[in-house]
Image (cartoon, rainbow, N blue to C red; front, side, top):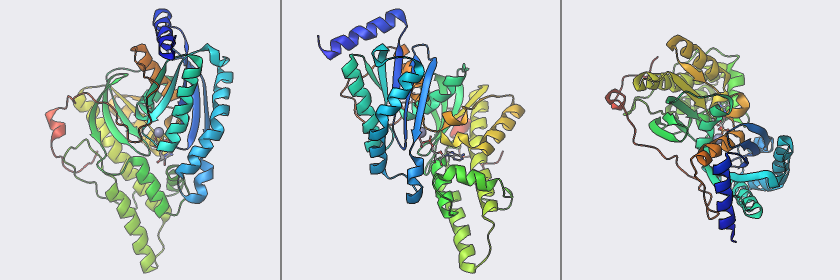
Length: 370
Ligand code: KG4
Ligand code: ZN
């Protein structure tokens, strides 16, 4: 019997019994992670080894170093995920791996490891879209209401989606330039803050006056889209102008005003989308969802609007494998698997259904104010 035949037999067994363990591996950037769940989505372990500290001196991730770290850490992280779940690798029924988007070398490390394990254990494999993983992060801790609006804010992506069920997405809006996390990272660099930028901007912003500076909100054709490059440039200009004039600039005030502008832009669209789509629940996910100011504002706005808010715990916002294994379970429950020819795709896109947009949300809007 070939690998394919043996893997097919395992698929049938999983479908018949509804039982089995899934291991997922995540390695799209600088976190090496593995997690184990059962076919109902119950999480048994989640291990994350971050190499972020290594990149402080470079001011950002160095892809080659990230790949080498993944190679070094993967066997230990996988072993610990199995140990924490109290199972042996022979107990696994399926292996999942993040196939994109991300750094190609980094992705290849985890994906190849996942495929090799699937082959060696004669179990089926499934490649997972990292952004679908972020969306699934809220499912790890909640029974979600469907449909809901989901705001995904990570280092590489900013998307506003209508989530009809765990694997059916409609795109309502996206960034037309920088992602929200990217804007935080670039603002951090301008403010002379070390990598990783987002958490450091948040820390500095706590000491500042959020109303010290006003940043103009961009006008966009699709009012559900986002644009952050203007605000980022405004921050850079503010700092350079002050330097040239030899003026003292309160960096904490800049950080706080920048953070307020970005968070208000994100939440304004997210809550408007809930209203327009007639849904009562909003999920926020991705690294920027770890931001305390965003979390606080989102909770306040949700209370005011009578919206159920889903926010993953902070550790579930940034990259981890618990969210990847949850996304894998969603696909496996639908009988979806992939062959071992599956490759890493650095710019992998999320698959959308045709958006059921209301006319009003397609029109050019006035300024983005709450
Ligand atoms: O989702 P994620 O861990 O990785 C990607 O898939 O991109 O997101 C990383 C991004 C980075 O841009 C980082 O600066 C941002 O999330 N981030 C934050 C915070 N924590 C992480 N941004 C603002 N405030 C934070 N506390
Ligand atoms: Zn991510």
